[in-house]
Amino acid sequence: MVYLTRIEHFNAAHKLYNPQWSKEKNDEVFGRCANENWHGHNFELYVTIKGLPDLETGFIYDAKKLGALIQDKVIEKLDHRNLNLDVDFMKGKMCSVENLVVGIWNVLKPHIPAEVSLHSLKLVETTKIFVEYFGD
Amino acid sequence: MSNRVSVFRKEHFNAAHRLFNSQWDDVANEKVFGKCALPNYHGHNYELDVKVTGVPDENTGYVMDMKILSDLVKNEIHARFDHRNLNLDTIEFKNLNPTAENIAIVIFNLLRPKIDSKLDLQIRLYETPRNFVEYPAS
Image (tube, rainbow over all chains, first blue to last red; front, side):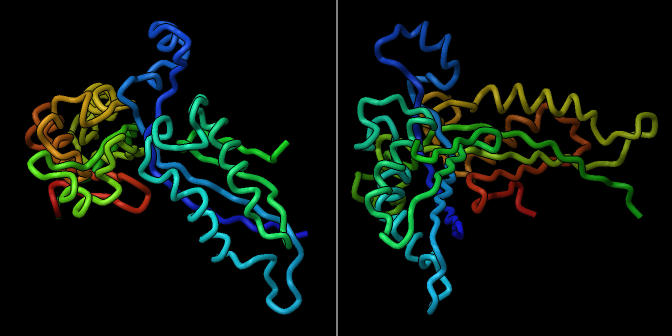
């Protein structure tokens, strides 16, 4: 098996805020991330697929096509958006980077071509924070 | 030969913004600013390089004490802009479009009065790893 990773990026606003809690409790738990008027990040998304190199192309899957697929199914929904307000698959969920990576997995998984499988997602929120998800 | 040396301090802040000219209608804003004009804001990890240039002091060997520069940038810039909405939460951009260009000029103007006038100051601001601006232009 060979693992191939394609990196795409998007810029988005969000806030960490639990509407079931008081403002004070949100401030206590989420600190500055709870700012009601949002803040934002340059997110980087690493999509890793695995498969066997095709005998004729040497590819497990055309990386350019994988890039177009990620753009079409994921980035289009997220880039320059407000994650809390504008993104259908995050509605009703806390907009943490953890929940976002799971949401992206669920959106992307059904579109992964049959000849490969989705191995992992890595989502980088800042230079100091990133999450990984393997679908389990 | 000049003994001038440039020293740099890096800082970063995460903020939301949108690009929008309130004199224009939504159609004109979208035509010019595209996705950056979307009404619910988006955001960036801004990376800031503050460059101070001068001759090292005879007694200390410093162009500028980096601890002083570091505190200055933290207090004047990070505290003001980190985890804020630039359009809504800052007085600096109440009536100024928060483009990277304008943010760099604002940062320069906030820091300039607090740094010895015999030292030169230049701001480099990264809005994304691929888009960055410098002020004053060199």
